[in-house]
Amino acid sequence: MNIEGIRSICKKLPGVTEGVKWGADLCFMINEKMFCVTSLEGPLSASFKVTDEEFGSMSARPGIIPAPYVARYKWVMVQDPKALTNKDWEFFITQSYNLVKAGSPKKKAASKKPSKR
Image 1 (cartoon, rainbow, N blue to C red):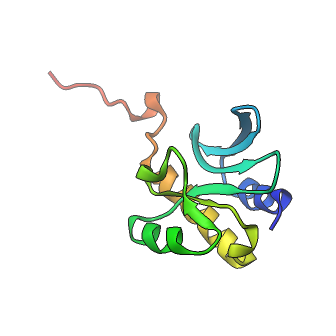
Image 2 (spheres, helix red, strand yellow; image 1 turned 90 degrees about the horizontal axis):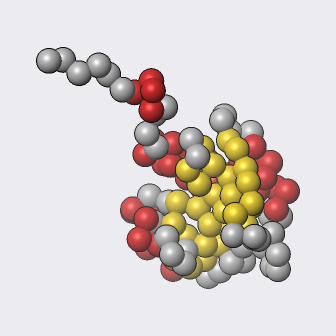
Image 3 (cartoon, rainbow, N blue to C red; image 1 turned 90 degrees about the vertical axis):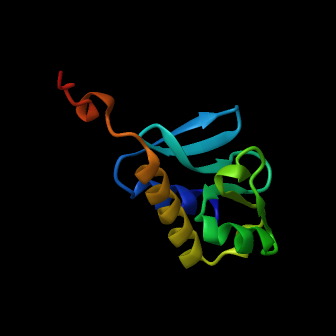
C-alpha cells in the first residue's frame, strides 16, 4: 500500500474531505472528524479507528502499534504498510469511516428539535 492507495480508498467514501494538519499529516474526515491519518513525510504510516474488540489483536500484530495520543479511542497506527493486505486496508479504513461517522453529531441545525414548553 502507498499513500495514493490510501487516498483512493478514502476519497471514494461519501462526504469525505481531506486536509493537512500538524504540517506533515494528510487527514481524511467525515463530518469534520478524522477517520484516517497518513504521514506525508518519511516512511508511510497510517492511523485509523478500530472496534474495541479488534484493538488488542490489531495492536499485537507486527508493524502495528496503538496510535500515539489517540489509542484510548481505539486507534491503531500501521507503521509497516505490508502488515495489512490491500483488502485489509480497504476493510479497516472503511470500518473506521463508519465508526467515526456513527459517532459524529448530525448537522447541528438539522438535529435541533424545538423544545416543547
